[in-house]
Amino acid sequence: MSREVAGLIIGLVAAVILLLMFMAWRSRLRRDAGLTAPLGVPEHADVTGRHEILYVATTRHDHPLERLAISPLTYRARGELVLTDRGVALSLDGAPTVFLASSRLVAADRATVAIDRVVERDGLIRLVWRAADGIHVDSFIRPASGGPADILPQLERLCAAAENGENP
Image 1: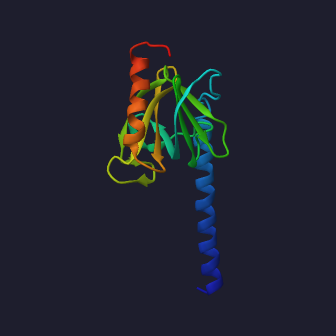
Image 2: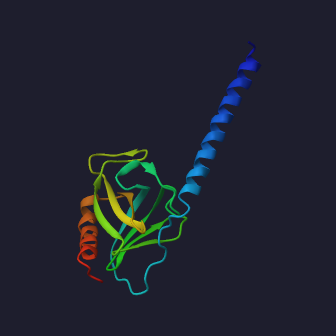
Image 3: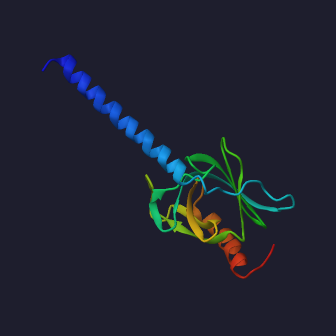
């Protein structure tokens, strides 16, 4: 077999693999099209804290390796986590601000792995929230400075407020 034929075969195999990857991603986008994240921060929300973060991914609840393509939380991004008295805002670079009202928050805890990100033990924060009726999802964030211990107590208070039926 000549070099040209071998190169052509390798090129065709690579093209087929790329095409399959593209089709799989498009299929995932169609599958998750019904799930959206709530946008916009309420007018009278009082900011209680701001933290630089790396948004990692949103996955099915308790399935940290199954990414969901929830708009606008589809791709990894740098941004800011804004804690308010009414919930949590994810202000990610190049995307509209997502606001998770405390009534949507289910839990906040630590995690070590999500999709393709493995960090030191408990280096990620996992936010469990309701994306739609009865559908819980997990969003993973990594603090850019400090650690989860700086943010987690405030997130847990917001989750507890929702559990107790408090309306901030």
